[in-house]
Amino acid sequence: MIGIIGAGPAGITAAETLRSYSDSHITIFSSESHPPYNPVLLTTHLKTGGDKVFWKGKDILERLNVDARLGEKVERLDVKNRRIITEKGDYVFDRLVIASGSRLYAPLKGLHLPNVYNFKSLTQVQNLRSQIKERKKAVVVGGGFQGTEIALALCEMGLEVTLIEATDRIMPDRLDKKTSRFIEEVLESKGAELAFNSFGVEFVGDGVCRAVITKDGDEFAGDIFIAATGMTPNIDFCKKELEISKGIIVNEYMETSQNGIYACGDVCETRNRITGEREIFANYWNAVRQGRIAALNLLGHRIPYDGSDVMNSLKKLGFHFIVAGDVSGEYEEVEKRGNYWRFYIKDGRLIGYIIVGDISNAGLFYKLMLSGEDVSRFRPLHQLKDSDFVFRTIQQ
Ligand SMILES: Cc1cc2nc3c(=O)[nH]c(=O)nc-3n(C[C@H](O)[C@H](O)[C@H](O)COP(=O)(O)OP(=O)(O)OC[C@H]3O[C@@H](n4cnc5c(N)ncnc54)[C@H](O)[C@@H]3O)c2cc1C
Image 1: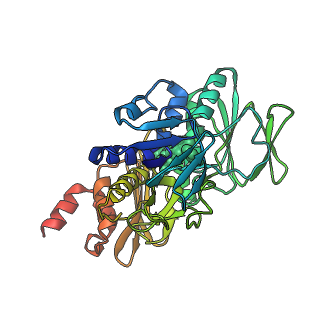
Image 2: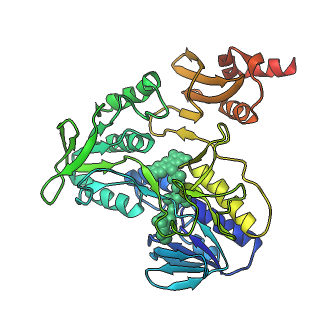
Image 3: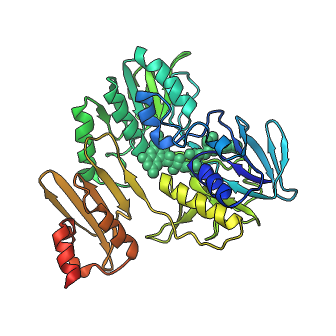
């Protein structure tokens, strides 16, 4: 039997790839009882409901003819005896793909209170959706990519929103204050209150949460609370069996430290295509590419994974906002007719960029960044945003 642990984007891509090339018996385990869904669509699902969140169709597992063990959490992996132990049974596997993704990381007390939610499961979002009509004031803790997107969605739904962030800006590991301001202005125009330099430590209340308390003793009251403070990989069931740093360590073929056991998606660490550093990349397209490569190699191919990208594209702003690659160090910038571009350069290479607004040349920036070619002849790099300029330069 080929086992797959996790039915998110990485696990489903692995299942699709395996089924395209093999008739083997495939068993897929998911701790969630829903059909496979796409977490990228959860903020939209909060607003609209419906079935679009099941992005492959609710019947994907039947169509793939896999043995679907939904609502069956894997408790332990026994590598020596090739066994998967779940809450309900014991299964012998031949080869395995671990795609168990990530869960909320929130070092705050009071997470158990019933009106404190997170966006790391469809059940949580459905519960929030069922309550939201009776609620008026939401407090989102965490101004990273997901917390910001959630705050924007809640504003769109007519709630009063406070966004609490420990640093002085939005997406602090990717933006400086100048680029954060583009997002802050949108949040403010939608009526959101932004509480920077506020480190949430506890959700407080008797029976239900009534406020978040910060390290400095400030209180932010509300009737709905969202924890969006980060993620941590789901490795509890396998951490004694596999080589692990923060996430599961894989080689260039997505194979773990154990023969025939592969890992992909948010649960594993891969190489950054730009910096070469090993990290966890919580990004849909990386998860999908890794799921495919893991499955192909499990089937006996030898196809190396070419590395992951750090890429954030913030939705719900009303304009495009893309942050890609390594956004540290020297940069060039230009602002024109409400659009903004910033290019990060190191040793003559384009290593990262930020686009606010016009994304017409985004594909070109991406290719130049990945190619690693010397872009000195295009400097000043902001000319890259003009397609004519690039065309003329390449012709020369
Ligand atoms: C609100 C939100 C918005 C996002 N927006 C974007 C975006 O705009 N663009 C983007 O690129 N990325 C976005 N992401 C990130 C993206 O969704 C993830 O990178 C992607 O889902 C990772 O896929 P995965 O299959 O590795 O993990 P997951 O999607 O986390 O799936 C893992 C699955 O495994 C199950 N599982 C875990 N442990 C076990 C176990 N022990 N036994 C059985 N099953 C288990 C989990 O229940 C889950 O269903 C967003 C994420 C969230 C939460």
